[in-house]
Length: 117
Image (tube, rainbow, N blue to C red):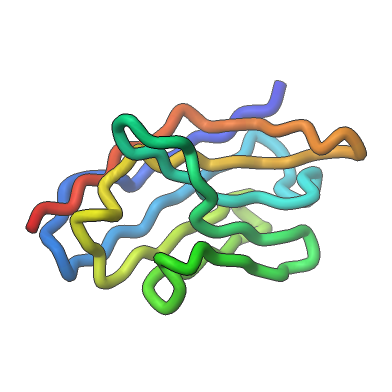
């Protein structure tokens, strides 16, 4: 049973920083790619950042230069460092892992990030 557990969300003022963590129950190399998505109230879930098994990263235009995705393979954990946070970054952030030839998606339970102005 694959489990992804997020942590690190919270309330921060605009301009501040947070680091989200996503701990996988097994090796993160079992996933073709892992990433972070976010969903604001009344909006669809959007990609924020992804990292492939080979280490290639991709970011949404809205977070480029502010957010950094990284991983610690020894801890089977993926991180999202978020700097220069803006109120529009407020959302529930979900960790995602995509696995296998069928590209099945696995999701964490989500962690709330709230940025006050």
